Image (cartoon, rainbow, N blue to C red):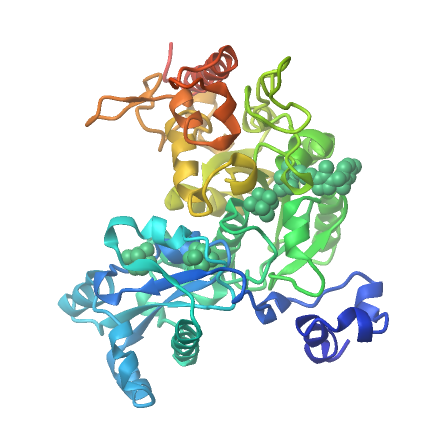
Length: 504
Ligand SMILES: Cc1ncc(C[n+]2csc(CCOP(=O)(O)OP(=O)(O)O)c2C)c(N)n1
Ligand code: SF4
Ligand code: SF4
Ligand code: SF4
């Protein structure tokens, strides 16, 4: 279809599609052009949006990296370029700041310094507040109430931001992984997806694409998606957030489809092209597990990103084998007879690393360097690579919309979801291949806060999430089911410590 925007997207935007549109070719063939999510406008769905306080910003890029919706972007601009651009609107000068990272350090080294700006796209922002949470003590972002004026001003700032040239290459250092998203090559997820506010999955997908695009180029990869939230918010017709090739087959056979695509690409001489399979824990641990295991045995150069929400989120939160013991989930609901999920959690990473010659990482988006390094290594590894990422899901976990990042960090600290990387090329022995680097107090059972002396164990983590609320009495004492859950997490942690040579 030649003019998809005019002929299809506009009708959906104006809510006239079902009355006016004839059946069209794209719809008939289940095709959506790339990046049509860019046309979607979410500006009316939330009552608040972030406001940038430039003088407090240090240019850490955390807000840009963690936003699930590509609604907040950063840019470095050279002084002369900015001066010229500001002739159009002098009042926007205050949006730019001289940070140590991009200004002072560059000036000291005799290089051209740059001013840094953060801009918010009011049409993509869902108002989750995640960016404000990760900015934290820098206090360079705050949520403000939306009004006509606020929307208009934010839009004007964003339009100005878009008109400025891309960040010059000199300011994007490969070693500073959090800066990937300064490069247009890394912004391969345009937003406009129908995910919930503050969805942890979407951040994982955006970051995987950013690392892949930054290192290997904008047209370097394709995605095979297993049915789940990611396919629904990624292809709610006519909107698609991806600038890379993407296909959805079925819940249970995304890995088999990927194997076919890899074989065909290799026949066509497209071996360097990266292929990523996306799927939730339901798809990868349960329904598509056999297909995944087959892929892991194939030796084919395919990467898998598991978005582990510990539930079948898309269909309303049924228990999967990744659900934690004692978690209140559908099909394992808390009631008078049962106290939530009674089985132990299945550990996909542990199982995956027992397949020969497979790279495995278990990681969280909030630990940016660990996450990005896992993706970079998966792309480099000449065979199957599985990256299992903890994905906070606000509605199913019972957490605030701005808490995805915080909670994923807490999941690591509490041993709910330990970090690991397993690289068969590191040596012969399991303990040489398996690294628990990044976990706090890695030789101990639990992490103890040095200031408060409080133990942050699985029970302490569970207290912070609604999905475990039924496991605590009025005094905050844990139920028997919660004690079993704590035991399960400790057993898993001990197993990992033993395999990594940290426990005799
Ligand atoms: C064989 C099959 N069974 C059931 C479904 C219905 N279904 C679609 S998505 C989904 C849940 C997906 O859960 P998960 O893989 O964990 O991904 P999430 O939605 O949590 O991201 C289910 C049960 C299906 N599409 N195919
Ligand atoms: S409020 Fe949420 S959607 Fe909006 S910019 Fe911040 S992180 Fe992104
Ligand atoms: S998180 Fe805060 S300090 Fe860091 S770039 Fe964003 S606004 Fe600036
Ligand atoms: S239900 Fe959970 S995983 Fe699905 S879109 Fe919403 S927040 Fe994301």
